[in-house]
Amino acid sequence: MGVVSGRKFATVWRISGHLITLGPMELKRNMRYAVDIALKDTPVVLVHGARQTGKTTLVKAIAKERGAAYVTLDEHPVLEAALNDPPAFIQGLGKMAVIDEVQNAPNIFRAIKASVDRDRTPGRFLLTGSANVLVLPKLGDSLAGRMEIIALHPFAQDELAGRKSGFIDQVFAPKPLTITSTILERKQVAALVTTGGYPEAMKRRDLARRRAWFGAYVTSILQRDVRDISNIAGLSDLPRLLQALAGRSSGLLNLADLSRTLDIPHSTLRRYMALLEATFLSTPLNAWSANRNKRLVKAPKLHLADSGFAANLCGSDTPSEVMNSSAFGPLLETFVVNELRKIAGWNKTSVKLYHYRTEGGREVDIVLEDVRGRIVGIEVKAGMAIGSSDMAGLKDLRETARDKWVRGILLHPGTGITPFAKDLHAVPLSALWEW
Figure 1 (cartoon, one colour):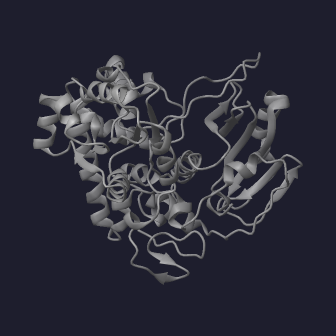
Figure 2 (cartoon, rainbow, N blue to C red):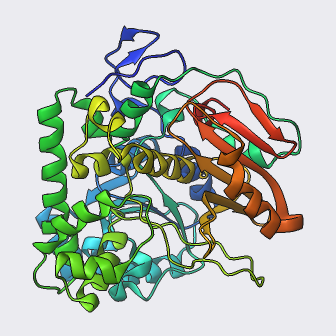
Figure 3 (cartoon, rainbow, N blue to C red):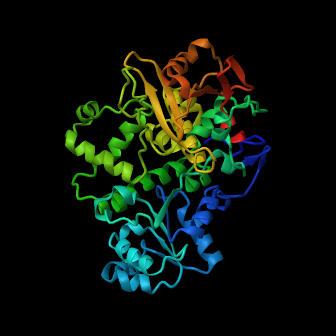
């Protein structure tokens, strides 16, 4: 695995060319602020995301600072107590409690709801979950109006650099775009893509050990989380489904083609895809629609939750391998989509992410839409050379968005901002974490 060095975009191994010992688990998480704010006015706060993204480290630190009880439902005796008598279990935790991996005991939510209805003091419960409780049938009795949900993703590049990116705020702001950017060589970009952001995987500088971690990670999730939340037989199909999805990274989701290729019944495949989304391994990007007469493709695009994870599944998990393969562009797009999802959590401008594709083939990799319906289009290019033809999809989106259009951005590994029009600019990839 390559080591990315540089003043502002360093990984956890090198900063300014010097090897450092700071591990990713020790770095500050930018979502910590959102959790602290939520605990001040909300009785229940749930931090959810894929396993091994740092949820436990985050909530343990908060529990220690607040003097709260900490329990994890990954421990069998604790889980048994929570399952056997949820009200007594909740009552015994005291005034503030941190409950890790809460999805393991679905009935506990009713006990938490009853407890909160008796005492709505803010910050009473801080929960974590490695499965999306909102899409699990057993958890239909939600804590609506009592719980705030905060997503925690693998590390973002700005977190690794010890700062908060304001990229989304910048591209929606009316002022001209300016940046003094870091120059990224092709191999450095490939290293960012293949490294990804899982804390434990990033610690493993030895490639064989890193591959072993990813293999164990998939096995653990399939044997624990997926089996716990499903009654589907034949889960041995899921590893090869994940591999197939990684190979189709950034492409349109075509369930019929996947079903034929993998020889998995269409109905079973749909349930598998729901399970992968529920455990945050697959995070498809939905299609944007302007509700106009233009004929747009409605299928979502495929993205796994981490580009390093996807690269590992593809078998192109070193910078030299990926930079010379056809997977480079698609994996870079997955990297950018995930970076935007992460930094959306700490930018002031609230956005949703989509993709844009017409039936005629015009497309834009990422569409950012804010709460006012304003649109910023983002194209991703792995090559250094750029031209006006690379702006074709953005121009088409601009025409469709009309008065909601703000600007179009072409992200690429180069340096400096190149204007192609007053609202169309080529911008360095490093702006994602340097703005």
